[in-house]
Each structure stands twice: as C-alpha cells, then as structure tokens.
Amino acid sequence: MSEATLSVSSLWKVFGPKANSIIGTPDADLPRAEMLARTGCVAAVKDVSYDVAKGEVFVVMGLSGSGKSTLVRCLTRLIEPTAGKVELDGRDIAAMSESQLMQVRRNEVAMVFQHFGLLPHRQVIDNVAFGLEIRGEDRDQRYTRAREVIELVGLKGYENHYPDQLSGGMQQRVGLARALAVDPKVILFDEPFSALDPLIRRDMQNEVVRLQEELNTTMIFITHDLQEALKLGDRILIMRDGEVVQIGRPDEIIGAPADDYVRDFVQEVPRSHVLTLRWVMRPPQPDEALDGPELPPETIVQHAARQAMNASAPIRVVENGELLGVVDEADIMRVVIAEEDAEAAPADGAPAGVDLGSAAPAQARP
Image 1 (cartoon, rainbow, N blue to C red):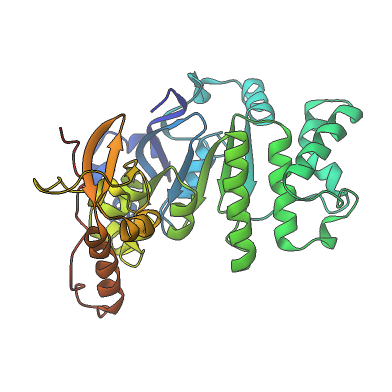
Image 2 (image 1 turned 180 degrees about the vertical axis):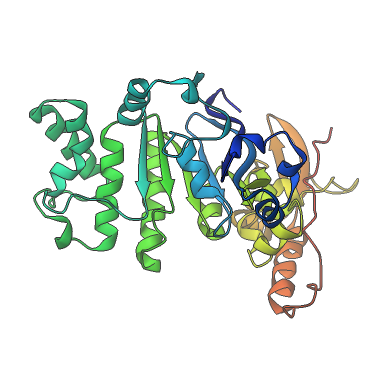
C-alpha cells in the first residue's frame, strides 16, 4: 500500500463513568454486555487500528450498534476519542488545538451524512458554496467553484432551485457537491444513501465510483449494506461490538471470511461477481496448451467467463510477465455451481457442492 493519508492506531471510545480507567484493565476485554453490567461503561470503539492510502475507498461496515458511525465521528473529533491516535498526513488530530482542528474540518476533511443537512432557505448554489463561504472566500470565487462541482455531480441547471424542490437523490447530490467544493483530502460518508429508494441509491453509488475514478479523492464510507461495501470499497473493515473482525479487499472478505460472523454476512453474495482469477487459478497440466488468452490475476471471475468459454486453451493468469496459473471453463463453472448450490441450500443447512467460503488464493508459481 502507498503511504497512508489517514492512520488510526489503537483507537478507543468508551462511554460511561470513569471511561479512561477501563482501558488497560481486564474489564476492557469483557464482552459489551458484561462490561456494562460490571462497570457501567460501553466500549463503542474498541482498540481499532487501520491505515487508509491516498486515493483509496475504505469501507467500514457492520450491523447497527457495531460502532462504525462512532468510529467515523472520532476521526475529526466530532466525538472525542477516549484513547488512541488518529493521524492525517502524519499530524496527530488528537493533539490539535481547537483552531487547528477547525482548519482541518474546513479545508481537509469533508463529511456527507444520511440526513442531507441542507439549508432550506438557500438555493443549491449557496448550499454548495457554504463551506467556501465559511472559509472566507469571496463571492465570485466560491460561486465559480460551486458551479464546477454542481456540473460535476450532474446538477447543472438546478443552481437556483431550493432543496424542497429537489428529490432525495438530488438533495444528496447537493450534499456531495458541498463536500467536493472545498477540495478535501478525505471525504467521510456516514451511511449517506441508506434513506434513498433502491434505484436512486444505486445511481448514487455509481456516482461515487465515477467521481472516485475522476478525482482520486481518499474516501471513508460507512455502511451496513454488504452489497454497497463490495461495490464501492477497495478494502473493507467489518466491525462487531466496537471491534475489528476483518479487514481486506472484497475478494478476501468473500473468499476467506475470518469467522462465522463474516461468513454469515457473505454467504448469499455471488462468488463469481467478487472473486478474482487469483482465487480460482490452478497450475497448468503437463500436456496443457499454454497459448490461451492472457489476463491479470485481479480479473473478476464473471468478467473472464466469456473468454474462458470461447478460448481453445486455458486462460493464462499473468502478473508482471510471470505465469501464475491457468483457468479454464471448468474452473469458472466450479464457482458458478457453488453459487447455485448455496442459493438452493436450506437456511439451516450447509450448502452442497464446492465450498469456497474458506478458500485461499493460489500462490505465485514458477
């Protein structure tokens, strides 16, 4: 991974009396219910560490109460952490003065929330330019920038509309434009699309993907929806009861779940839509032709299926000029059949067929 834009180390947020005294004691290791009964405290975020690289979309997901929203609010001290360190480009946010922290919030980190928080008495262009106004930029400069990002998020022509004249999806685009207008280093998304209708939600997810490809902005995205996490995330952190259960790329989360909690999360996800050739490749057989098409190991299995079916020889999985393995139609079908068996299995029974739930990616081969 490239150098971290954001680094979180041993972060804790404990709510309750004498919260600081919990960390480092045996009580800190208690399950949440037992800690509450014994100490009157709840560890909403419990010894969390991770790095986010420049330009990465890092998704934090978990069920309600897992601590994911508390975690994202600790990053800019909207909620004060109990212990630990958060560094932005090597600067400790916990050690910043109020004025320094305000500068970070105004200039370097932007947030997009589930509830849009638009100013109802101001037009779209004024809502988008609001952060620049707070920053003290003159009217012409902030309006020029606001118009740029309004066009970027697909709202050109709506500059003079008021929020109540827009649909929910359009209002969220205004919120996204407002975040982008200040040209932040990091954008924090706290379940921004969970209140939107499914089709609008999908459109907004596609918009985030498009903007990320165009702008390469570092993003931390909070969600409880696994499909959303898999679609958006370069890497995914899964939380439970304030703790990190697993961090990995989407294919790692699907291909090698860390425990039964993660396995339950991912059991209905179509493997061929997420797993890469690295997970299904195999060594070539001695008599096997090696003149088939060439694909990189991070190619999604679904995307390689047609080539595998049409090729007269197995696909060669190649990285940096090195042959890692091969994949043929039978290898692709193995994944597809496992998906069908998983869908057909009863809810209380293990799926029949090939189990990829605990698979490991094949290693590079000479």
